[in-house]
Image (cartoon, rainbow over all chains, first blue to last red; front, side, top):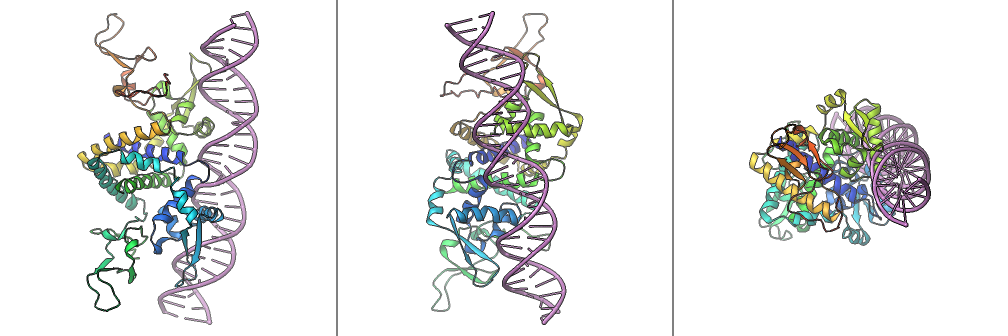
Length: 200
Length: 200
DNA sequence: TCAAACTAGTTTCGAAACAAAATTATCTGC
DNA sequence: GCAGATAATTTTGTTTCGAAACTAGTTTGA
């Protein structure tokens, strides 16, 4: 019985924040997109990745992005390696807008918890999200340090490689230090196995 | 920094459940309405109360209710005391539909947490929701046992009053035992003061 | 008593948000 | 080179939403 109550509270928080998002310059979906592109690493700043993150279709994702681009919050740049893909980046206007993100009220609310409560909640939410993602066939987004594909090269054996360079073992490309903490589509949580045979 | 991450997880859970709600018979907003009317006490089964709960407008609330009524999930009954108000109740079809509520995946996900994590999360969510409600001028919904207006009469001094009858001190009406655990619009959390002078 | 102010609910409207399907361009495997 | 997959977009029709106008019942207070 307590599970249902807790689940309802979770939903309620989400709904309240969603309602808060209707203030002036951007709509809730657009705020979501702006937040996503601010937090996603270079591999993952694509319409498709945002669609997966948002658990929606690519068509819907495109519309939110188009609006943000038209408003000057995002700019697009085609990938060099793949002519189909585009990479979205926040403009300085986009970054400034984030400071007015209505979602900040939730951050402040969470911040008013004491440290132990907050970490307990984060751990619990992580688990809930994992369960939810598997049951709904959604992809979980996460950051390098807890990803199976994350490799650290302690000391480069080539002079050009700096000490303790990070690398994505899946894509075989180096990862910039500032990108290690950003969300990635290819995230694969450690100590978990995929049952569906989907090996990205 | 951990606060922002936790807040993002909260939002993500909400978004995932919302996306799950697009399955077949009812829409996300309609599921919310159905859940609300299943959980609200007799005072609170009105369109206005649902609108407040959902942090939306009365007009929007009416539309969701209209759809549920047309589908035979809800029935309306005018209040005797106030000709303007209506009370919505779930039909047997509505109750049966709740068993197929896509939101149940969240309940199960929360249920997979161990007991201490779950209660910690519930406590934390309560606090977050309170903070959020005050900052956004929303009303919090709650249940009798933690409400200022809740009065228990240990032994009725009138023969007609049964032992340990419950009563709402605000409205001055008796509360049926089965309604004590239901959500109420007039909920006023204990040990809290309203600053806005709004004394309902 | 009766008009003004208020409240509950509904309707209407335009703007988004959404899913689904069709379309175009590009890439990959064979 | 060609078939099939993939990234993104466009299009279409539905749903949801807030805002504002509206109806009808209720309260207030002069």
